[in-house]
Image 1 (cartoon, rainbow, N blue to C red):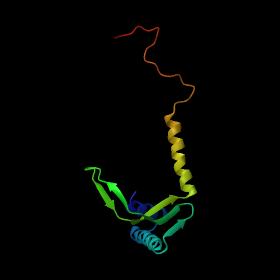
Image 2 (image 1 turned 45 degrees about the vertical axis):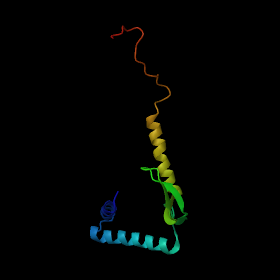
Image 3 (image 1 turned 90 degrees about the horizontal axis):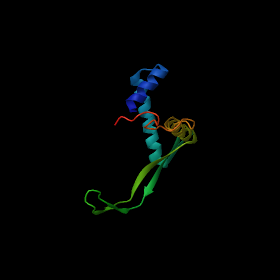
Image 4 (image 1 turned 90 degrees about the vertical axis):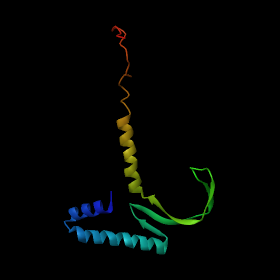
Length: 120
């Protein structure tokens, strides 16, 4: 999903012009970034927590050449999903594992019937 998709969805749901909705969405994103840079952390209940963390310097390896390469310390943004988001994402795992697992009562498939002549 892109920002354009978000704008379109919100505009349709709230019956607002897309241009006005785009401005509101952009201002929301701008406010999130500004707050994150200023305070280092944003907690959105039932959604998650964005936080700036400092990664120390390290030595990495270039995967193409195998050469050791120094990587400088840097600030990175991390995201930890909230409980509601975690629960909804976990539900995807339950749904996919339920549909991928055959019922326990079905017999295993076999390739040859013993009473049938084989054609081969």
